[in-house]
Image (cartoon, rainbow, N blue to C red; front, side, top):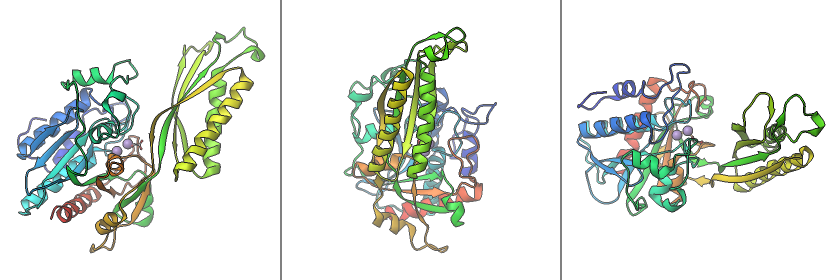
Length: 406
Ligand code: GLV
Ligand code: MN
Ligand code: MN
Protein backbone atom coordinates (compact mmCIF):
# COMPACT_ATOMS: atom_id res chain seq x y z
CA UNK A 1 0.00 0.00 0.00
CA UNK A 2 2.73 2.48 -0.88
CA UNK A 3 1.07 5.31 -2.74
CA UNK A 4 1.15 9.05 -2.54
CA UNK A 5 -1.49 10.04 -5.08
CA UNK A 6 -5.20 9.76 -4.34
CA UNK A 7 -6.60 6.41 -5.44
CA UNK A 8 -9.94 6.13 -7.23
CA UNK A 9 -12.75 3.95 -5.87
CA UNK A 10 -11.60 0.72 -7.47
CA UNK A 11 -7.99 1.25 -6.45
CA UNK A 12 -8.99 2.11 -2.88
CA UNK A 13 -11.12 -1.02 -2.74
CA UNK A 14 -8.20 -3.08 -4.06
CA UNK A 15 -5.89 -1.49 -1.45
CA UNK A 16 -8.16 -2.58 1.38
CA UNK A 17 -9.07 -6.04 0.10
CA UNK A 18 -6.13 -8.05 1.52
CA UNK A 19 -5.90 -6.32 4.90
CA UNK A 20 -7.11 -8.56 7.71
CA UNK A 21 -8.65 -11.13 5.36
CA UNK A 22 -8.65 -14.75 6.42
CA UNK A 23 -7.26 -17.04 3.73
CA UNK A 24 -9.47 -19.81 5.08
CA UNK A 25 -12.87 -18.09 5.07
CA UNK A 26 -12.35 -14.95 2.98
CA UNK A 27 -13.81 -12.97 5.90
CA UNK A 28 -12.21 -10.05 7.72
CA UNK A 29 -10.72 -9.83 11.22
CA UNK A 30 -10.19 -6.13 11.82
CA UNK A 31 -10.27 -5.65 15.56
CA UNK A 32 -9.92 -2.10 16.87
CA UNK A 33 -6.41 -1.00 17.90
CA UNK A 34 -4.94 -4.25 16.49
CA UNK A 35 -2.72 -4.73 13.46
CA UNK A 36 -5.15 -5.01 10.52
CA UNK A 37 -7.31 -2.12 11.67
CA UNK A 38 -4.22 -0.01 12.42
CA UNK A 39 -2.97 -0.73 8.89
CA UNK A 40 -6.29 0.51 7.54
CA UNK A 41 -6.06 3.64 9.68
CA UNK A 42 -2.54 4.28 8.34
CA UNK A 43 -3.90 3.82 4.83
CA UNK A 44 -6.65 6.34 5.58
CA UNK A 45 -4.11 8.89 6.83
CA UNK A 46 -2.09 8.34 3.67
CA UNK A 47 -5.17 8.88 1.49
CA UNK A 48 -5.98 12.05 3.40
CA UNK A 49 -2.41 13.32 2.96
CA UNK A 50 -2.45 12.51 -0.75
CA UNK A 51 -5.57 14.69 -1.07
CA UNK A 52 -4.21 17.51 1.06
CA UNK A 53 -6.96 17.02 3.66
CA UNK A 54 -6.38 18.22 7.22
CA UNK A 55 -6.26 15.42 9.78
CA UNK A 56 -8.00 15.57 13.12
CA UNK A 57 -7.30 12.64 15.45
CA UNK A 58 -9.30 12.81 18.68
CA UNK A 59 -8.23 11.39 22.02
CA UNK A 60 -10.26 8.22 21.40
CA UNK A 61 -8.65 7.33 18.06
CA UNK A 62 -11.45 8.58 15.80
CA UNK A 63 -10.03 10.29 12.72
CA UNK A 64 -11.50 12.99 10.48
CA UNK A 65 -9.93 14.18 7.22
CA UNK A 66 -11.18 17.70 6.57
CA UNK A 67 -11.60 19.49 3.28
CA UNK A 68 -11.11 22.96 4.67
CA UNK A 69 -13.57 24.94 2.65
CA UNK A 70 -16.32 27.35 3.57
CA UNK A 71 -17.04 28.29 7.15
CA UNK A 72 -19.06 27.23 10.16
CA UNK A 73 -19.95 23.77 11.45
CA UNK A 74 -19.00 21.13 8.94
CA UNK A 75 -20.73 18.34 7.11
CA UNK A 76 -19.32 15.00 8.19
CA UNK A 77 -19.51 11.77 6.20
CA UNK A 78 -17.86 8.42 6.74
CA UNK A 79 -18.20 5.19 8.66
CA UNK A 80 -15.81 2.68 10.27
CA UNK A 81 -12.92 0.40 9.30
CA UNK A 82 -13.18 -2.25 12.04
CA UNK A 83 -15.12 -5.47 11.40
CA UNK A 84 -16.93 -8.13 13.34
CA UNK A 85 -15.04 -11.44 13.64
CA UNK A 86 -15.03 -13.00 10.17
CA UNK A 87 -17.03 -10.10 8.77
CA UNK A 88 -17.65 -8.88 5.25
CA UNK A 89 -15.64 -6.38 3.22
CA UNK A 90 -18.34 -3.72 2.93
CA UNK A 91 -19.73 -3.10 6.43
CA UNK A 92 -17.89 0.11 7.32
CA UNK A 93 -15.20 0.44 4.63
CA UNK A 94 -17.79 1.09 1.90
CA UNK A 95 -18.83 4.27 3.71
CA UNK A 96 -15.23 5.45 4.15
CA UNK A 97 -14.10 4.73 0.59
CA UNK A 98 -17.30 6.20 -0.86
CA UNK A 99 -16.83 9.34 1.22
CA UNK A 100 -13.26 9.87 -0.09
CA UNK A 101 -14.44 9.25 -3.63
CA UNK A 102 -17.42 11.60 -3.24
CA UNK A 103 -15.10 14.37 -2.02
CA UNK A 104 -12.82 13.74 -5.02
CA UNK A 105 -15.76 14.07 -7.38
CA UNK A 106 -16.95 17.31 -5.82
CA UNK A 107 -13.45 18.77 -5.98
CA UNK A 108 -12.85 17.68 -9.56
CA UNK A 109 -16.14 19.34 -10.54
CA UNK A 110 -14.91 22.58 -9.00
CA UNK A 111 -17.68 22.57 -6.41
CA UNK A 112 -17.14 25.21 -3.70
CA UNK A 113 -18.82 24.11 -0.44
CA UNK A 114 -20.14 26.74 1.91
CA UNK A 115 -19.15 24.51 4.86
CA UNK A 116 -16.12 22.29 5.54
CA UNK A 117 -16.62 18.64 4.61
CA UNK A 118 -14.99 15.96 6.76
CA UNK A 119 -14.48 12.25 6.10
CA UNK A 120 -14.68 10.41 9.40
CA UNK A 121 -13.57 7.00 10.63
CA UNK A 122 -15.00 5.98 14.01
CA UNK A 123 -13.21 3.30 16.04
CA UNK A 124 -14.74 0.07 17.44
CA UNK A 125 -18.12 0.56 15.75
CA UNK A 126 -18.84 -3.15 15.99
CA UNK A 127 -17.99 -3.50 19.65
CA UNK A 128 -16.32 -6.76 18.64
CA UNK A 129 -13.34 -6.30 20.95
CA UNK A 130 -14.58 -4.36 24.00
CA UNK A 131 -18.27 -5.27 23.83
CA UNK A 132 -19.75 -1.79 23.51
CA UNK A 133 -21.20 -1.01 20.07
CA UNK A 134 -20.30 2.34 18.45
CA UNK A 135 -17.66 2.98 21.09
CA UNK A 136 -15.79 5.69 19.16
CA UNK A 137 -18.85 7.77 18.34
CA UNK A 138 -20.26 7.32 21.86
CA UNK A 139 -17.04 8.72 23.29
CA UNK A 140 -16.61 11.52 20.73
CA UNK A 141 -20.16 12.73 21.36
CA UNK A 142 -19.99 12.23 25.13
CA UNK A 143 -22.91 9.77 24.98
CA UNK A 144 -20.68 7.48 27.06
CA UNK A 145 -18.07 8.97 29.39
CA UNK A 146 -14.47 7.81 29.08
CA UNK A 147 -14.36 7.02 32.81
CA UNK A 148 -17.03 4.32 32.31
CA UNK A 149 -15.19 2.42 29.59
CA UNK A 150 -11.45 2.88 30.05
CA UNK A 151 -11.22 -0.30 32.17
CA UNK A 152 -13.22 -2.49 29.77
CA UNK A 153 -11.22 -5.57 28.81
CA UNK A 154 -11.10 -7.68 25.67
CA UNK A 155 -11.22 -11.50 25.59
CA UNK A 156 -7.52 -11.67 26.51
CA UNK A 157 -7.92 -9.34 29.47
CA UNK A 158 -6.30 -6.34 27.72
CA UNK A 159 -7.79 -3.07 28.98
CA UNK A 160 -9.13 -0.54 26.50
CA UNK A 161 -6.86 2.14 27.93
CA UNK A 162 -3.82 -0.09 27.36
CA UNK A 163 -4.85 -1.15 23.86
CA UNK A 164 -5.19 2.53 22.98
CA UNK A 165 -1.83 3.41 24.54
CA UNK A 166 -0.21 0.61 22.52
CA UNK A 167 -1.70 2.24 19.43
CA UNK A 168 -0.07 5.55 20.41
CA UNK A 169 -3.25 7.04 21.93
CA UNK A 170 -2.25 8.04 25.42
CA UNK A 171 -4.26 11.17 26.13
CA UNK A 172 -4.85 11.06 29.93
CA UNK A 173 -8.09 12.91 29.72
CA UNK A 174 -9.63 12.61 26.25
CA UNK A 175 -12.58 14.92 25.72
CA UNK A 176 -15.77 14.64 23.70
CA UNK A 177 -15.98 17.18 20.90
CA UNK A 178 -18.67 16.02 18.49
CA UNK A 179 -21.96 17.85 18.88
CA UNK A 180 -24.35 19.99 16.90
CA UNK A 181 -22.19 23.06 17.49
CA UNK A 182 -19.23 21.37 15.73
CA UNK A 183 -21.08 19.37 13.09
CA UNK A 184 -24.09 20.59 11.08
CA UNK A 185 -24.88 17.26 9.40
CA UNK A 186 -23.59 13.71 9.45
CA UNK A 187 -24.27 11.35 6.55
CA UNK A 188 -23.17 7.72 6.73
CA UNK A 189 -23.27 5.57 3.62
CA UNK A 190 -23.52 1.86 4.39
CA UNK A 191 -24.06 -1.41 2.60
CA UNK A 192 -27.61 -2.56 3.24
CA UNK A 193 -27.65 -5.48 5.67
CA UNK A 194 -30.99 -6.88 4.59
CA UNK A 195 -32.97 -7.35 1.39
CA UNK A 196 -35.28 -4.36 1.40
CA UNK A 197 -33.66 -2.66 -1.60
CA UNK A 198 -33.46 -5.92 -3.57
CA UNK A 199 -37.16 -6.53 -2.98
CA UNK A 200 -37.96 -2.98 -4.13
CA UNK A 201 -35.61 -3.23 -7.13
CA UNK A 202 -33.80 -0.09 -5.96
CA UNK A 203 -30.07 0.60 -5.71
CA UNK A 204 -30.02 3.32 -3.06
CA UNK A 205 -32.19 3.88 0.01
CA UNK A 206 -32.34 6.32 2.91
CA UNK A 207 -32.62 5.21 6.55
CA UNK A 208 -35.83 6.11 8.33
CA UNK A 209 -35.03 4.60 11.73
CA UNK A 210 -32.89 2.14 13.67
CA UNK A 211 -34.53 -0.47 15.85
CA UNK A 212 -33.60 -0.41 19.53
CA UNK A 213 -31.20 -3.23 20.31
CA UNK A 214 -28.95 -4.56 23.02
CA UNK A 215 -26.40 -7.12 24.10
CA UNK A 216 -26.90 -9.00 27.35
CA UNK A 217 -24.41 -11.34 29.02
CA UNK A 218 -25.98 -14.47 30.53
CA UNK A 219 -23.76 -16.17 33.14
CA UNK A 220 -24.95 -19.70 33.83
CA UNK A 221 -23.23 -21.53 36.69
CA UNK A 222 -23.47 -25.12 37.86
CA UNK A 223 -21.16 -27.85 39.09
CA UNK A 224 -18.21 -29.33 37.23
CA UNK A 225 -18.27 -33.10 37.31
CA UNK A 226 -17.34 -36.29 35.48
CA UNK A 227 -19.18 -36.80 32.17
CA UNK A 228 -19.30 -40.57 32.65
CA UNK A 229 -19.76 -41.27 36.31
CA UNK A 230 -22.25 -38.54 37.19
CA UNK A 231 -25.81 -39.85 36.91
CA UNK A 232 -28.00 -37.66 34.70
CA UNK A 233 -30.29 -36.85 37.60
CA UNK A 234 -27.35 -35.78 39.78
CA UNK A 235 -26.04 -33.10 37.41
CA UNK A 236 -26.14 -29.35 37.74
CA UNK A 237 -25.27 -28.65 34.13
CA UNK A 238 -25.30 -24.98 33.03
CA UNK A 239 -24.98 -26.03 29.39
CA UNK A 240 -28.46 -27.50 29.55
CA UNK A 241 -29.86 -24.29 31.02
CA UNK A 242 -28.09 -22.29 28.34
CA UNK A 243 -29.35 -24.59 25.56
CA UNK A 244 -32.95 -24.27 26.73
CA UNK A 245 -32.50 -20.50 27.00
CA UNK A 246 -31.24 -20.30 23.41
CA UNK A 247 -34.34 -22.21 22.25
CA UNK A 248 -36.56 -19.97 24.36
CA UNK A 249 -34.97 -16.85 22.87
CA UNK A 250 -35.62 -18.06 19.37
CA UNK A 251 -39.22 -18.97 20.16
CA UNK A 252 -40.00 -15.75 22.04
CA UNK A 253 -38.57 -13.61 19.24
CA UNK A 254 -40.56 -15.50 16.61
CA UNK A 255 -43.76 -15.19 18.62
CA UNK A 256 -43.22 -11.45 19.07
CA UNK A 257 -42.09 -10.77 15.48
CA UNK A 258 -38.74 -9.52 16.78
CA UNK A 259 -35.08 -10.72 16.68
CA UNK A 260 -33.00 -12.62 19.23
CA UNK A 261 -29.65 -14.34 18.75
CA UNK A 262 -27.10 -16.14 20.86
CA UNK A 263 -23.99 -15.83 18.69
CA UNK A 264 -21.22 -16.20 21.24
CA UNK A 265 -20.76 -18.83 23.95
CA UNK A 266 -17.87 -19.59 26.28
CA UNK A 267 -17.78 -22.61 28.51
CA UNK A 268 -15.53 -23.52 31.45
CA UNK A 269 -13.51 -25.66 31.56
CA UNK A 270 -14.44 -26.45 27.94
CA UNK A 271 -13.61 -30.11 28.36
CA UNK A 272 -15.31 -32.84 26.32
CA UNK A 273 -15.53 -35.32 29.18
CA UNK A 274 -16.65 -32.92 31.91
CA UNK A 275 -19.97 -31.41 32.88
CA UNK A 276 -19.11 -27.70 32.66
CA UNK A 277 -19.07 -25.44 35.70
CA UNK A 278 -19.86 -22.22 33.84
CA UNK A 279 -21.37 -21.17 30.55
CA UNK A 280 -21.40 -17.54 29.48
CA UNK A 281 -23.45 -16.61 26.45
CA UNK A 282 -24.32 -13.27 24.89
CA UNK A 283 -27.85 -12.47 23.75
CA UNK A 284 -28.27 -9.93 20.94
CA UNK A 285 -31.89 -8.72 20.89
CA UNK A 286 -33.49 -6.21 18.50
CA UNK A 287 -37.08 -5.01 18.45
CA UNK A 288 -39.27 -2.48 16.70
CA UNK A 289 -39.87 -0.54 19.93
CA UNK A 290 -38.12 -0.03 23.25
CA UNK A 291 -41.04 -1.58 25.07
CA UNK A 292 -40.95 -4.68 22.88
CA UNK A 293 -37.21 -4.98 23.56
CA UNK A 294 -37.75 -4.83 27.32
CA UNK A 295 -40.55 -7.39 27.11
CA UNK A 296 -38.55 -9.76 24.93
CA UNK A 297 -35.43 -9.66 27.10
CA UNK A 298 -37.55 -10.04 30.26
CA UNK A 299 -39.35 -13.06 28.79
CA UNK A 300 -36.06 -14.75 27.86
CA UNK A 301 -34.54 -13.93 31.25
CA UNK A 302 -37.62 -15.33 33.04
CA UNK A 303 -37.45 -18.58 31.09
CA UNK A 304 -33.72 -18.87 31.78
CA UNK A 305 -34.43 -18.36 35.45
CA UNK A 306 -37.24 -20.94 35.56
CA UNK A 307 -35.10 -23.45 33.72
CA UNK A 308 -32.13 -22.86 36.03
CA UNK A 309 -34.32 -23.75 39.01
CA UNK A 310 -35.21 -27.06 37.39
CA UNK A 311 -31.57 -27.72 36.49
CA UNK A 312 -30.13 -26.77 39.87
CA UNK A 313 -28.03 -24.07 38.19
CA UNK A 314 -27.95 -20.27 38.51
CA UNK A 315 -28.23 -17.53 35.95
CA UNK A 316 -27.26 -13.85 36.15
CA UNK A 317 -27.94 -11.37 33.35
CA UNK A 318 -25.92 -8.21 32.67
CA UNK A 319 -26.84 -5.69 29.96
CA UNK A 320 -23.57 -4.76 28.24
CA UNK A 321 -24.52 -2.52 25.34
CA UNK A 322 -28.03 -1.14 24.90
CA UNK A 323 -29.03 1.34 22.21
CA UNK A 324 -32.40 3.06 22.10
CA UNK A 325 -34.58 3.55 19.03
CA UNK A 326 -33.34 6.15 16.58
CA UNK A 327 -35.77 8.06 14.40
CA UNK A 328 -33.75 9.95 11.83
CA UNK A 329 -34.96 13.50 11.20
CA UNK A 330 -37.79 12.81 8.71
CA UNK A 331 -37.47 16.18 6.99
CA UNK A 332 -33.76 15.60 6.35
CA UNK A 333 -34.34 12.00 5.20
CA UNK A 334 -37.15 13.10 2.89
CA UNK A 335 -35.12 16.01 1.51
CA UNK A 336 -32.28 13.58 0.69
CA UNK A 337 -34.64 11.00 -0.79
CA UNK A 338 -36.66 13.16 -3.21
CA UNK A 339 -35.98 14.75 -6.59
CA UNK A 340 -33.94 12.18 -8.42
CA UNK A 341 -34.11 11.20 -12.08
CA UNK A 342 -34.96 7.65 -11.07
CA UNK A 343 -37.66 8.74 -8.62
CA UNK A 344 -37.42 9.09 -4.87
CA UNK A 345 -35.07 6.78 -2.99
CA UNK A 346 -37.06 4.59 -0.60
CA UNK A 347 -37.02 5.31 3.13
CA UNK A 348 -36.27 2.08 4.97
CA UNK A 349 -35.78 1.12 8.61
CA UNK A 350 -32.82 -0.97 9.73
CA UNK A 351 -32.23 -3.43 12.54
CA UNK A 352 -28.46 -2.79 12.49
CA UNK A 353 -26.73 -0.27 14.73
CA UNK A 354 -24.64 2.59 13.31
CA UNK A 355 -22.57 5.57 14.43
CA UNK A 356 -25.12 7.76 12.62
CA UNK A 357 -27.65 6.58 15.22
CA UNK A 358 -25.41 7.68 18.08
CA UNK A 359 -24.85 11.09 16.51
CA UNK A 360 -28.58 11.50 15.88
CA UNK A 361 -29.33 10.63 19.51
CA UNK A 362 -26.82 13.28 20.57
CA UNK A 363 -28.57 15.99 18.58
CA UNK A 364 -26.48 16.00 15.40
CA UNK A 365 -28.75 16.12 12.38
CA UNK A 366 -27.89 12.77 10.80
CA UNK A 367 -28.89 10.62 7.85
CA UNK A 368 -27.89 7.35 6.23
CA UNK A 369 -27.71 6.11 2.67
CA UNK A 370 -27.91 2.38 2.00
CA UNK A 371 -26.48 0.61 -1.03
CA UNK A 372 -28.14 -2.57 -2.29
CA UNK A 373 -26.71 -5.89 -1.15
CA UNK A 374 -27.86 -8.63 -3.56
CA UNK A 375 -28.14 -11.40 -0.98
CA UNK A 376 -28.81 -9.24 2.06
CA UNK A 377 -26.16 -11.27 3.91
CA UNK A 378 -23.96 -9.26 6.28
CA UNK A 379 -21.60 -9.90 9.21
CA UNK A 380 -20.35 -12.74 7.03
CA UNK A 381 -17.74 -13.18 4.31
CA UNK A 382 -20.67 -13.48 1.87
CA UNK A 383 -21.61 -9.80 2.28
CA UNK A 384 -21.54 -8.10 -1.13
CA UNK A 385 -22.44 -5.10 -3.26
CA UNK A 386 -21.74 -4.87 -7.01
CA UNK A 387 -19.29 -2.27 -8.31
CA UNK A 388 -21.98 -0.41 -10.33
CA UNK A 389 -24.16 -0.23 -7.21
CA UNK A 390 -21.23 1.03 -5.13
CA UNK A 391 -20.54 3.73 -7.71
CA UNK A 392 -24.22 4.68 -7.73
CA UNK A 393 -23.88 5.01 -3.96
CA UNK A 394 -20.94 7.38 -4.44
CA UNK A 395 -23.08 9.47 -6.83
CA UNK A 396 -25.85 9.59 -4.26
CA UNK A 397 -23.45 10.58 -1.50
CA UNK A 398 -21.74 13.27 -3.61
CA UNK A 399 -25.14 14.75 -4.47
CA UNK A 400 -26.20 14.66 -0.84
CA UNK A 401 -22.97 16.32 0.35
CA UNK A 402 -23.33 18.96 -2.33
CA UNK A 403 -26.83 19.81 -1.16
CA UNK A 404 -26.01 19.78 2.55
CA UNK A 405 -22.85 21.86 2.20
CA UNK A 406 -24.23 24.46 -0.20
C1 GLV B 1 -23.56 -3.49 13.93
O1 GLV B 1 -23.33 -3.80 12.77
C2 GLV B 1 -24.65 -4.14 14.59
O2 GLV B 1 -25.80 -3.81 14.30
O3 GLV B 1 -24.40 -5.06 15.36
MN1 MN C 1 -21.32 -0.90 10.00
MN1 MN D 1 -21.66 -4.29 11.43
